Length: 251
Ligand SMILES: Nc1ncnc2c1ncn2[C@@H]1O[C@H](COP(=O)(O)OP(=O)(O)OP(=O)(O)O)[C@@H](O)[C@H]1O
Ligand SMILES: [Mg+2]
Image (cartoon, rainbow, N blue to C red; front, top):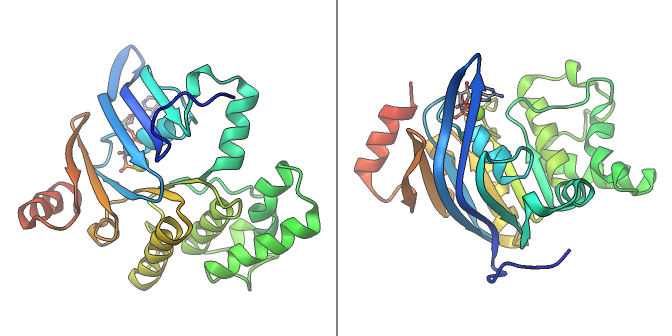
């Protein structure tokens, strides 16, 4: 792999990306011509109404699905130009994804789910288990190691998904509503932990959220409305913006 992006402090660059879905002959365009740069060590929040394309944008930014047009660069690699193998390795080693629907493996225990990214990458099982334990301790779940996902509450499943994303110490954490199932105290703990991940470990955190309290801890907020980025700046500094967001988002 060769580095072909000029600024190494930018972990992601999205150039004019658009996404079009065609469903039963009808086109859906979640976002159109979005350009974005994300710095290393930055915590970026993305807000927007339900259906505005936040999850789709996160999947495209993480190379999970391709944009319909435009280019994504992750750590200097043009994702579309990588071989399938290199794209898989980039995702497995450099990106931790927290899915909105968690995507835990139902037949694996909590501990095995969190260890899975390490096992897939060839880490010995004993080492993987102890790193999984450390990651689960961080989210307060070290007492649920042998539970199956169906034996957990929604918020606990969410925290397992967070532990699994962080276990590889990824350069980039992409989190889709990571506090959506948590009470406000837990949600605050997880938000502050994600902020520490960005600021202390210099990992990058992109967090999609409906919650202004989560966004207020980010370094930068992007608002996605009608397929465009309608705000890109500091969160919580402009009372009118917050009021407008509240109307749009807090349904
Ligand atoms: N695979 C798909 N095929 C067709 N349409 C899709 C597909 N995935 C998403 N969409 C549509 O794209 C739009 C954006 O969906 P997306 O899940 O990105 O929204 P969102 O902003 O994350 O919403 P929420 O806040 O409810 O999670 C929606 O209208 C959705 O129906
Ligand atoms: Mg979503």
